Image (cartoon, rainbow, N blue to C red):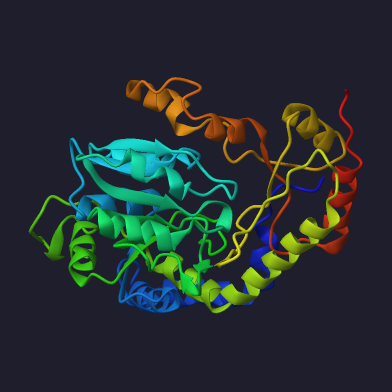
Length: 366
């Protein structure tokens, strides 16, 4: 069976470095908010190109805490694309704000031409989600946010190192939010996240807020939370960050092979915006008869995933928004047709060639 994703291959490639780092941290006797976290924050900020980075416990925490730091609260509206993972929307609603959905474009990113019509007097921010490791049209989004004095938050959970016109995502907005969930391109070995920003006041607020609202132990200046990137995960991320370009180059190579090799006319392959540098978190195709196709793949020994089968506006969690089915036809069409095919670091040529052959041989019952 060729799995849809494998994380063990990536581990084995740098196994000794990872194991040495874990032992180093364990033997240090310091496991929370120590040298590994502070070093990772500096190194990741330098990599993204921002003045600061604050390590957090997860990508979801990065989202809701970022919006809280920007003052987003009850009665506010935040524009977000309809096909985002539901965590992006939860980042908005956990602050009491209302998500205002916008359709995606042909690159699966927010359709910039549809943002302006959704701006009202209640709109306080735009949350851009760089989905599948590709990049939204950031020049126009920055222009709109400046025009209407809106905060800009980037959800870069799937786009570590991706860039628009040679500037990395996470450096465009007021705050960039990252997840280091194990399956991410820059993945930890458990839950982990971070925010990046050029605004040192936001960074300081988040640094205090993540630690029970405490600047100094037992002296709490605000009601905060517990969302700390731990030392072991930070240390492991530092190892992976050293190899991130090699990791990214491998993923680009695999994507290019799929781009060239898949020629089944039933398959819609992903497009890449010209002025962007994509890092290929997933290789997402579309096909009309998805259920039959997925069953065919499984019968042939090929795994697959769906990112994502239910748009947030149609989820049970957000029924209270009263957004009817059919309100976002592009979003809903994507949800009904997208398939993520096997794609991971350490994928062998023979495995990929087999996947390509099986996909090209697919013929549905007419």
